[in-house]
Amino acid sequence: MPTARETLLEAAHTAVGTQPWTGVRMVDVATAAGVSRQTLYNEFGTKEGLGAALVNRLVDGFVEGAVRAAAEGSRGGADPVASFAAAAAWMLRTARDEPIVRAALTGCWGTPMPLPAADAATVDAAGAPAVHPGEPGALAATLCKRMMEGFSPNGSSGRLGLACEAGIRIALSFVVAPSSERRDEDAVGQIREVVRALLAQPR
Image (cartoon, rainbow, N blue to C red; front, side):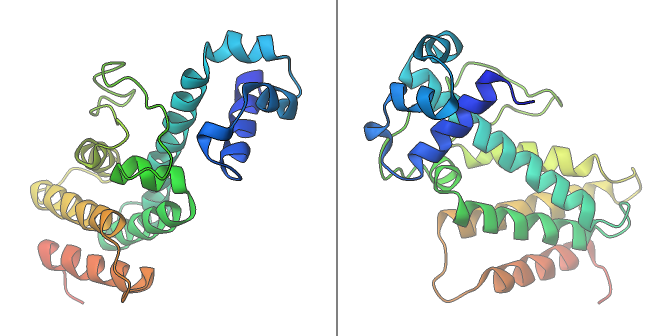
């Protein structure tokens, strides 16, 4: 059963999907979640706290989803090219479909939203640099570290890390500066070719 906090974040996410954050009212979020306004304030303190928690939740979900896609595409860690391509496809699709994630990655907000404090943490639970919305570099480092954990150490780990970082950064570049002439499939194909070349794998 979802906690009150989870239910409130879902209600806030729904609300911001239909109107600018500036138009979202705490009382409406509480009503939609089926809890009292006092419960909402107890959980998040202020509207800014609610907004920051929502952004943080969506960006964390973006990272977890990309790592999960990489694991599912890797065929047990045996196919890094497929792994990075699957992660890139997930990243592009999610950034396109989720405006808050896209804004957090690019720093381009249609309507400003509160952001998590940059000094709230220095590393995440996995020991990677904490992901702060609007900092694609930190996100790339976190994603690369998490994805590399899915591969067994071997003599080519350095090259694998280089290919992983390159693939992730190219994917993020398509989010920050999307091409009107390329579909997601085209971008993923480009990433696949770059990763394959860096790993010097036969076609």
